[in-house]
Length: 165
Image 1 (cartoon, rainbow, N blue to C red):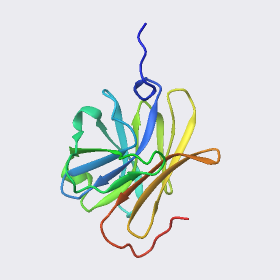
Image 2 (cartoon, one colour):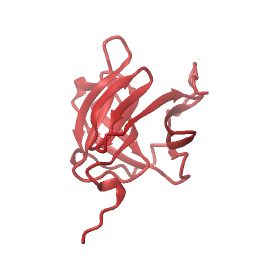
Image 3 (cartoon, rainbow, N blue to C red):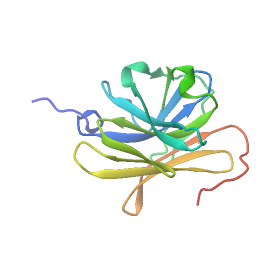
């Protein structure tokens, strides 16, 4: 009998943060390892400056980012998050942008005003929202009253209009 960890099953899906630098590079921040064979669907900046859904890459397009240039935390586990890098077509992001990503085997991924909503492989509806603090972007998924996912990505400078609660 073969037993697979929960994060690699065909029904699982996770949320992450995707940073696009505007020069053809993407950085993915996740709370768990990137499953082989997964698809990565992520927000990008639309013509009106708002986040729209979705561009798609494969897990195989990413490689671990071992540079010390990414400051990120997993606020739920307290452990260092997984950070991955990929090349993307330059026209996918002409200016820097950070948005939500869905990783795994989800269905019906849609943009919401501040994040993404999906239906995972088991048919469960899930959503995560992004917000801006004084020096970075948070992605939060709640399950009832507790946080299921809470990732933080520093931008390295003070932001003018924080909107996190």
